[in-house]
Length: 260
Image 1 (cartoon, rainbow, N blue to C red):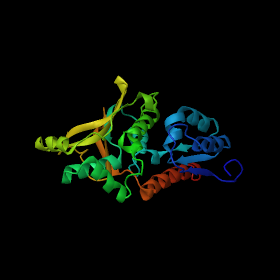
Image 2 (image 1 turned 180 degrees about the vertical axis):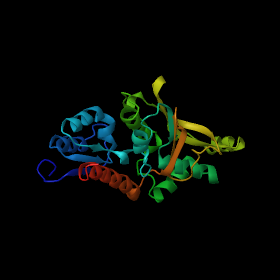
Image 3 (image 1 turned 60 degrees about the vertical axis):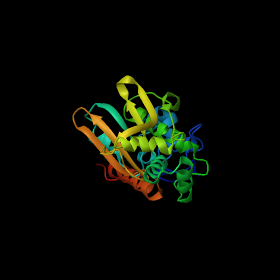
Image 4 (image 1 turned 180 degrees about the horizontal axis):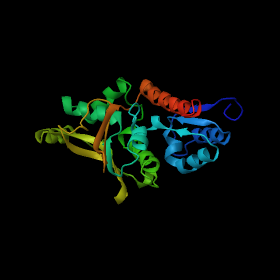
């Protein structure tokens, strides 16, 4: 279908595979090679093969758009590529995974154990049957790789990300943070000049803008001209993903159909 159908834009929204990026990577290569624009929510191809795909898109005079790969409905990639284009980014950090944020929120609110909060997240559809991808920081790490490679001109892989998940956190740890008027959040961080990419649970003051509740995401960008900017919103879900995909489609329409 991808190789033969007549279309203008391939919308690739198949499930993410962070080991091989297939079959999405093959779909995207095929479309770009046929001079077709691509919009994707699939993190695998962007994390594993972005330089190749960008070069292929440029060689064929088409656009590759991937806003939905990071933080769902938050237009983080567009803001950094367009609005902050004249800035140097010294640091980027935030809450990138809604599943972990929900679990940590519930552990703090009602002194639940990790296992109890995870079970609740599963019942509500926020966590998969096998939550490893989320709770071990893999999902957040992949998002850091995408931002590092596509926005910050770094050359990284998931192996470059220092990762510590939330599975060993206890209610006592949350209570100790509470005594300090703090809480714990799984924070992903990039420091470009130091080559640092890491994901780990951190103690964060309750007044900090990154202390969002439930499944929300929040990201702070430190820029030399614009200063500190914090983006907050829904980081996952079908409607939220659709918002980002539609935004990318309209971006392509504005530039190639209207010629602006």
